[in-house]
Amino acid sequence: MIRALALFCLAAFPAFAEEEIIAGLSQNRVSITADFAGSEILIYGAVKRDGPMPEGSKLEVLITIEGPSTPITVRKKERRAGIWINTEAVQIGSAPSFYAIATTGPMVEVLTQTEDLRHQITIPKAIRAVGISDQAKDAPGFVEALVRIRQDEDLYRLSENSVSLTQDTLFRTDVILPANLTEGAYRVRMFLTRDGTVVDRLERRINVRKEGLERFLFNLSREQPLIYGLLSLLIAVVAGWGASAAFRLMKA
Image (cartoon, rainbow, N blue to C red; front, side):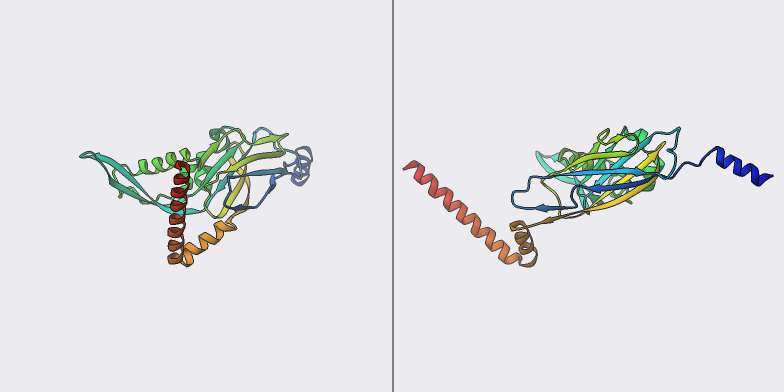
């Protein structure tokens, strides 16, 4: 009797399918050349289901692009005796060189604080600043200053309502990478959420690499620093002499 009742319930109320991200990038490699002025990446995808769409909650999409992370020291300057000097410093364990977030709606509706803590999605969570409270009086203020500075440099961004979602199935967004990119692997994460809870995630990579003259000079500075320094000095001397000669011709 119980088995028959269970079969009836399954037939009357079909289970909703799990949702899965299928996505791609317009390019997964960015070359930094001498005339590099930035790049635009198209991120697109669809939600795969093998059953009825879940009801009663709104589907949201959240996308992050994260550049290589490095330790960084944030210093505080104060004016004393008419001179600006460094008074305090905080060593942050790891901070992304670039970090962009794009969402289908307001962040407070797309993601709960619990899920943010679990997946380290928002900008403050992406910065690893463990154990900095003993380094300065207002240690969290140094992290806020770092975020503010990199936002002004267009290296940290939060773009709400910038991901288009069609019929709860197809999504896309365009992310512009600035000209001052750091070389390395950029991590692209895509999240599906319902009621602020992550139901699926997918990760891709974008490789950013110097090419041509930029690659030659970069390798030279690392492998042959003496030759790189002499070459830089020679270029400066030649440029200075050329400017002086041009100025004399203009006066003649």
